[in-house]
Length: 168
View 1 (cartoon, one colour):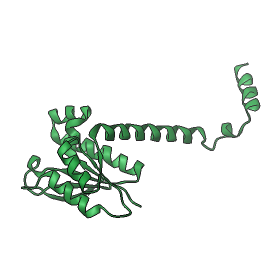
View 2 (cartoon, one colour; view 1 turned 90 degrees about the vertical axis):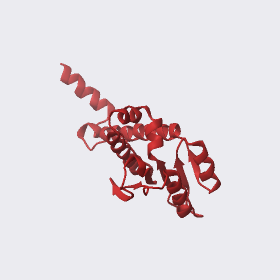
View 3 (cartoon, helix red, strand yellow; view 1 turned 60 degrees about the horizontal axis):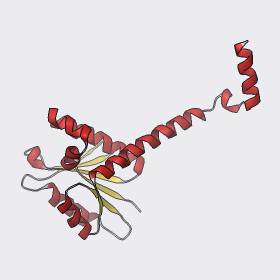
View 4 (spheres, one colour; view 1 turned 90 degrees about the horizontal axis):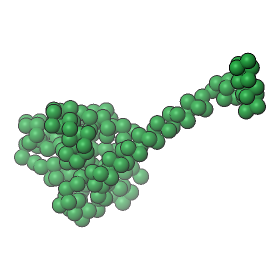
């Protein structure tokens, strides 16, 4: 079973402090940072992530792109992100799939919930992203500790004896 996460890009940018600060300086930097964050989260979680942006913020674009193995979707010029998200939910919902939508827009949460998707408020997604980062750091640290070195093969007594000799 493959789970899907649809992220309302500009809603998340406005809700996460780091991204909101970037947006106030340069919107493109906030978008790029969110793309990087969600690509990392996709790799960790195993979910297929769709990142949706309104075209009114980027006139004339519209379309679907793959960037960092992430589906980045810009709405058509007269289409809202909510409309595109609702269409994606309808396309992806199935008996063997869970679809989550990350947005803090309460109206949109009610609509997508009515279509069978799960709601994921911006704050909860941020918590999940932070938790995944901690887990990745922990796994890296554990793999470094268990690296195939001579030290990892020594018994505690032998390690202590070598340490004593080293200090003499």
